[in-house]
Length: 54
Image 1: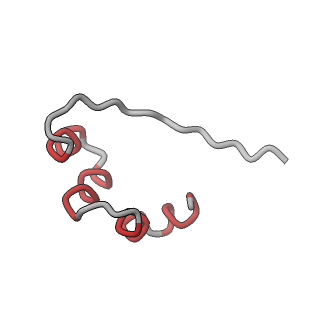
Image 2: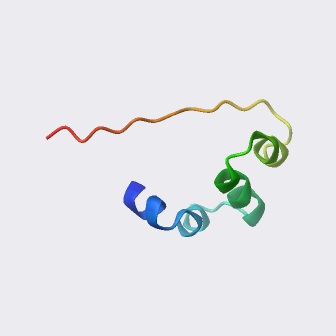
């Protein structure tokens, strides 16, 4: 799914059931819209590192 997200994040977010406002908040990468769509609840950011170990 990561490859699909990299290619078209909006389509993956829509397929996952996010609303248009939620999609724009996620894609923007800005904390303010994320807080807004989460109802002002506290949010935490996480960085995920993927290593293809072959």
